[in-house]
Amino acid sequence: RLSARAPGMSSQQALPWLPQRRRRVQRAVRLSAWACSLPLAVKLLAASGWREWPRHSALVPGWSGVRPNRTVVTLGPFELDAFIKDPQHWKVALAEKGLSATPAATVSKLEGGNTIFSVSYDSDLSGVVLPKGWEHVRVSAAGNDANFSELDWALDVKGEKGRHVSLTSDDGTLVYDASVGVEVPVGKGLSVRYAVDAKRAAKPFGPKFNPLTSDLQMEALRPDSLRQGAGLQYQSKAGGFKLGVLEPPPSQLSSNRSLDYVAEYKYKGSRRGLWAAPEATIRAAAAGGKPTYGAKVGLQGPFGLFSGLDIKLQEGRPAVTAHGRINMEREVVPGITLSSSTALAAKELLHRATTGERMEIRPLTLGTKADLGTLLPKVAGKGSELAAYTILEPGRTRPAGVGATVKLAGKAMGPVKIEAAGLLDREGRPSGSVKLRASAEGFHARYEGSKSPFGQRQYAELAYRPPRGLQEAVSAVSKFASLGPLDFLGIMSSDSAAFVRMTQSPEDFEGKPRVQVGFQYDFNRGLRVHGEDVLYDTGKDTGGILDETGRPVGHMEHALAQLRASQLQKLSKTEEVGAGQLWLME
Image 1 (cartoon, rainbow, N blue to C red):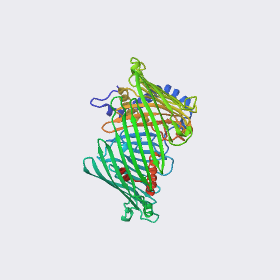
Image 2 (cartoon, rainbow, N blue to C red; image 1 turned 30 degrees about the vertical axis):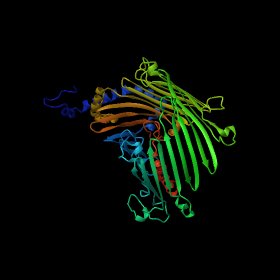
Image 3 (cartoon, helix red, strand yellow; image 1 turned 180 degrees about the vertical axis):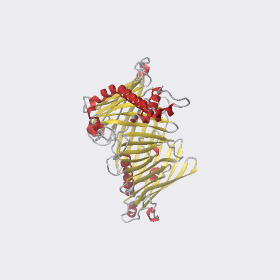
Image 4 (cartoon, rainbow, N blue to C red; image 1 turned 90 degrees about the vertical axis):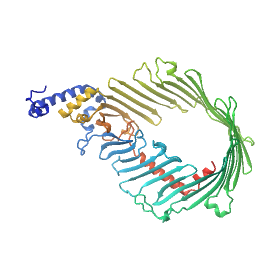
């Protein structure tokens, strides 16, 4: 009991009448909290310059009460991720839950310059299922607050049967590469195909287009070139046959050049037992007025064996190539697997050539993998394995590469999990990585380190998550005693922790080790909010914002959006075969 109180008076009503006693309790709680944490803090910070605490303090001038932090808010199927260091270094990203590496939208200011924003969606990297008939959808846009109207944007949509459209703008002009394909069945296994490709390139004095203002004229949609094609396709048990006739590129229409064409027959059998599965392809095609004829025969055998013969005739010159490959993996005894892979090709069999020009032998890779969970079930847990491989090249006395990996989730090791990998390349340069996870009595340790010719990376973190009862007590006391950073714990439902972290990467803090101390939180009462606050940071002044792997946060999404727009701009200027013509020749 804090004090005696009048009958019928609650403790909350009695507290204002006891200011002196409340101050004593506050001082006692503060002294107790800091006394418990002082030994650990001294040990953790002694090696990182704890005497310079005022210089490394993470309190941000001008942002009252705000410390460098990361906050993640779960909004249904999305997560809002905010990184904040100071008014000149921050980033906010919106992503699908579990896909934070590919955010749908970002707004950031990392170098004290302009505020940069980006929007991106890629169905190949998204959990959203597309309607039937759609293969992929990619949308991206990027810009900055200095010139909001000039966007680097791109739209790329691909469907089945050669249907495709890519849109972007180049110097304010709408450019695109679009294709439409139609397939009509006319009989059993027989169908007729038609496709058309349309392109529009940038024009210096053409109509302008801005997707933000929707200022679009019909003249901006007129294609510069059209390329049509038609074909037949027939499928049966004896194989498949296709014939396609293509219109030449627009720049060559006036030269009275003949149409391009492709005719192909393909057969693929099935393997029965140890008998090889035969494959055969016969093809005749013409592009640019130059006919090409070819045939391929192959046998897919057991144990990953394949052999084949390629014959090609172009401009009256025959070429014959024999090739083979092996990709074998076999469990010799329970828990031990051996593997090998290589390939060779004999070229120019009908012409004189030196041995080096005629024979091409790929490196031989030999590997061994041991399932430790099977071999040592009393010691190693499920998923534990040891693997090693070597790469041998013809004409070399020493291996071109040697590597090994190990994954340990040992039963005897308790809560410790270890993964390690090492490689020695052909120049004798070592590289490797180590991952470690351990948990015990509320302490959680994590370490990830890697070393390569490009530099060294390290990420080490030790977090202490107290029991639920102790967290609730600290939350209640912090509300009453006004303990500064601990006040935030009052809204916690569970999973608050203190942490100390060391990171090192070539891109951050001049490659030197960087130490951070703070607390993590996880509030979940209908709306989940989790993240961390950094109270101490040796890289406060010159270090960047770090993500959960210890790497600096950058403008990767903005650069990727610019790259996509640039690629589509180049595609609209070429006479390469479009998606519709490629579909006819599949």
